[in-house]
Length: 169
Image 1 (spheres, rainbow, N blue to C red):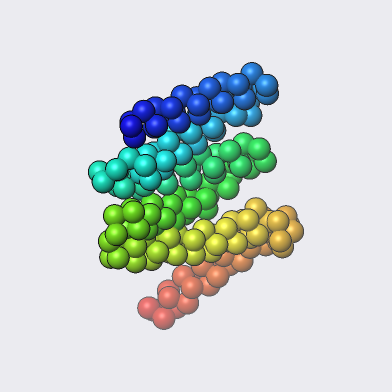
Image 2: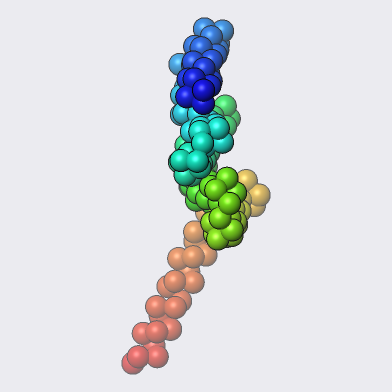
């Protein structure tokens, strides 16, 4: 019965995707759904697939997260956010591991998943601030983020090299 249920869910999801593609310009708008849908199927299978299925929560979480990232980037035309969005993939490994531990009743996997997800989210936040506000110049303005910051890095690096050379002589 579970196999029939999953087959039904997969067929409904595929039919909905094809209908959505007919209603909108699927080639330019909905292509990330073809990444997202398999991830959702893997996650669903982890929940209803029986005793052997909980490990599918990890790849299901990863593929679903990549699909969501691509969907948001495609909608907003901000593919440069991959410079820090990769950390969400790490966080999704943690979420998937936590789900796996929860579904299989393993407290160690749950703790490991929470720790990994926390690290991934912290990296996402840190790199997000760095890239979005400093490198891309959204917070400090394009002049500061794109010119002053790199020039300051060069200046500090040159000073450190000069200081090291002077100390070695």
